[in-house]
Image (cartoon, rainbow, N blue to C red; front, top):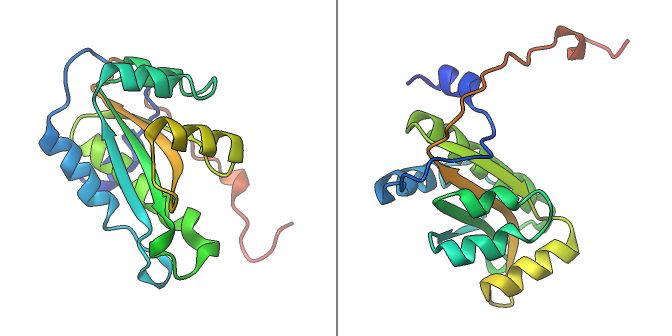
Length: 169
């Protein structure tokens, strides 16, 4: 699939088939994530892949929008390692770019995904860190559900009124 098609086809999936996701596909998504641009090439990302249904259920209870994790065959806890930071102000941008790459690669692999925010809410970050038993220098950025989506809702979101040429008027 061409990238321009993957961008148009990407949608958030909140329900998944019970079919397991092949490890090779998860690795391909993570490989794409690690190709993302990064401020000062700090690449602060790390990833915790969760396949255990009990752990997915626990993570699904982090907040009201993380419930779809309970029905996903794979969850990815997107992490930031402070030891890798050169410019702390830009780590969320770095990791957001990585997550976008991961989502686009998933479309190409026939998978559905859902990105669920954790950072910058300290309450969620602390609770997720505890759930995952992470070391002191590692923080949770977000949660990511992966699976074969049982729904494909393609919708054109282009809105010319949101484009401003030369000035905002």
